[in-house]
Length: 95
Image (tube, rainbow, N blue to C red):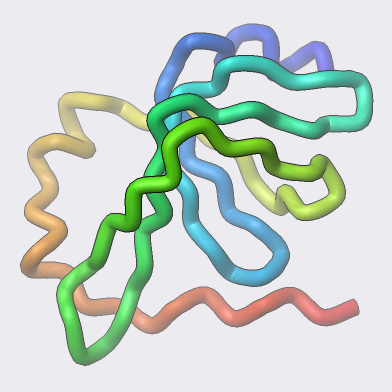
């Protein structure tokens, strides 16, 4: 997981196995791929309602729950009006 070093102190998006999307600042990680996010929010998607951002604060995510970690371009992210977006929630991953 040394490839995560470049993301420390940057805003990232995590997609979790249960379908949740979490945005926050990567504060740290360990050899088991557990990650710590600071000032994070869960983005809840719905086809009927706009995207809701639920504040989570400091958040620890177990490494085996993480499907994807990607860096967020702050300029592009702030330009998106989440109130206009409707989308299907990501379904949970089943093994």
